[in-house]
Length: 327
Length: 294
Image 1 (cartoon, rainbow over the protein chains, first blue to last red):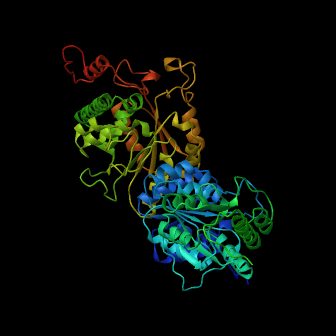
Image 2: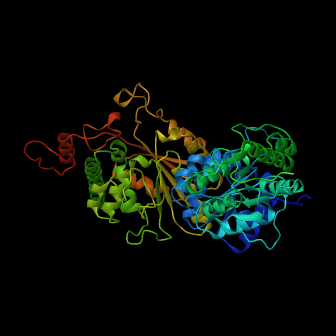
């Protein structure tokens, strides 16, 4: 059984910020000429006077956002992650993170799903970069339900926030009873054999992988970490304690992102061997979404196979502190 | 208007500029660090802005309708701090804490430390972008506030400046006034024909041509002629639908003879004798303790 598809996060973005703007006159949208892709154009149609086209000039855009924030507006800055995070990184550092100004950086086209754009647009280290920046709240929602809630929370929070959004439709993990809490991780599946920690829209695929593992007699405990910063340290330690076998899975580089956060945390609080699944210090390339998930081992089937192989390897090698029963 | 401005008022502004320069010299001397050339070239413009042009309330630094000032050339921070102190935002003696641990007067302007700063700056090219955001925000909020941004001429080598220069005319931001402190020297630059045998950051006329080509209303002024500075700033605040760029021709290190036009005084520590000479030239002679100086 696999999780159903939800709406594309970019559409949730355009619609949610537009809805928020109806009740919050402080909200403005800044676009760097990608609005027809990021769905900021939904906002442009509804509130043309508050849609600020910045042109193809992202360093300036982040600076303009900072200035607007000092006058009481709440700027939502929108473009592809490549141009919202990496290109204007120093502007984010000096004018937004160091000042704590109330700017919401919304990176569309995150992860591997960039419409075959290839390595220039595949930013695999946005979570690593943003969570390393003092003062920058960093959030990667799992699905359309959580993305809407994250954006609503971000609008109500006074300070800089980075929200990682995805171009294409992804699977829906949560129903409408879910309530996002900033800085809180959530157990989305209970299990006692192995702990899988995931973030962003990778989490639904990890839940599907847990289903595949269950069919093979392996019960996975799955922790979803939507907020990379501030990190839910107790939840990560508790999840590790459940099985003492931890695997992180992320649609990005294993260096410094979720895998980095979990290994740093457990190293300090509960030393544990952690296997990090994700891009192994490589750039991406042009291909379909499914092909890229296969290539980098992030499809549900590939995650399940890697976790199973890891468990078998550890059992054989006697690394596990307690016996793991395999079928 | 400048023509009707009383000679006494001009004299007062010139004395303010002198006191700003004294604050720069004392602050940098106390810190044994910091920039000199740029703050000194900007002092007259800062005096005109903070003591005549800008609508501000030193006792209410976050007054929503205030005019804003962004020092895009953030390394001239001590010049801005001196202007703010002389204007009454904080005690002049606080200038002696410049650059020291725990000080509100950081090496580059930090709005989280010092509430009367309208933006944090220090990485060049960024202040003008923030200034556009402030000007846009004031207009969207219906505030009749003007935003002044001071750029360095070397800073105009940053690409972000021209991203910003492209954008502001698109929004017709005539409440945005950029002042380029064209002091003809950058920190190091290139050897060539110019002050101190260094190639100026921009050729004669180049800045006027560039800002004009980007759609700005460009005004030029002698940045050390107080009457002219006041006149050009008053002219700039009468909007015609275009953002304004004032190219202020200045002398790096202005006011201290041995610093004027010398690129190595961009940032440098003064000896005790140099400090004494500078203070004397600025009309505030000090007594050097017997046996040398601290």
